Image (tube, rainbow, N blue to C red):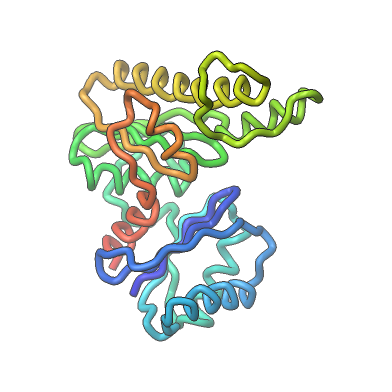
Length: 254
């Protein structure tokens, strides 16, 4: 089985593949200070709940936007699973031509998402990843990474609003009963949710126009389902897109 790990700024997602099938996945809070042995305990806790043996792991792949986490994860792969871990970065075969001014600046998660999205769409596409930041990644009809957009994440935007406005309460990010809010909570929810939907649809329309091709728009990330249900431009929802990309890239490098 292949263990894949996507380390984001806020959350880390673990996936366990049996061939091409995602057999299990788990989400935990990202910690920059988690040690090699703490990772071992984390893996053991999840594995024991599902009756999985460490010996069943034949490979491991990591995508991380948090550099301090990489070393401990690589050591845990060697110590507990006796495998060499593939870390997504320069020198790793992805099959993707990156047309960025400096390709090394592109986050590993964005590269992995682009690989998985093109594998699924087989045509020009835009990946919208709703995380700490919301990223828009554009892939050409022939599978080249063109670049994209980085915007403040939905939760980051809401947290900033509440932190800077003393009288505004923290609210749950859900669809309100009315767009014209009848109370402060509804008003914040409407502005947060529908304002963000407008941001997503507006950027996708502009990106599509600049790309000059019909595109498939794929949404992923923690809050993707909340926005996708209201968006007019998102074509499909793929919550495990990054894990799938890690599997594909791992296989390309074997």
